[in-house]
Length: 214
Image (cartoon, rainbow, N blue to C red):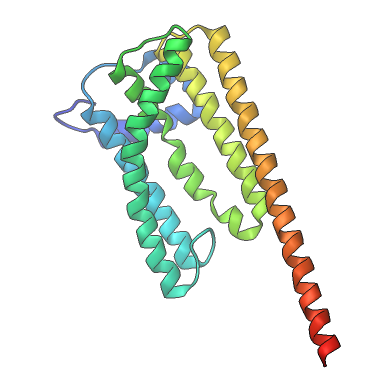
């Protein structure tokens, strides 16, 4: 793909390759050619993710539900996903550049931006699985963690194969990030369970007070 003509067929092919064979893809990925291509790629991923979340809101699954109101919020989510994709691309590229520097890999901004854009293929996958939160919050949290861990695996391949970072250092850093993800998930689940338990206890106490008053 080039900046003058965006090849959508190549985009689809590359997206599949990232998911199925990330090591092979990143080892042959172009790290030059301008920022337009990765920007378009990120926007497409954001649009697809936003459409999926919007559809889930219409069906009644996922984070945005509730008839017309849910659909309206779903449209807002679509716009938000596109904006988040653009902002996330640039911020993610800066963060990846810092990580790559620590791992003695490439510090070229465009190369890091291209790896970031490729890893953003995870956005539609995450949006597709958001319905699990509508079924069960714990299930949604676990699925979300699995998606994020897979994203870190893609990032590791991008670091080592495309940015030529040291494998040992990259592995340690990715494992640290994975451990933090798991820790945050456990903390979040624990906090939510305590809040729910407190809410249930308060509700029971309120009912008992009403009975005593009657």
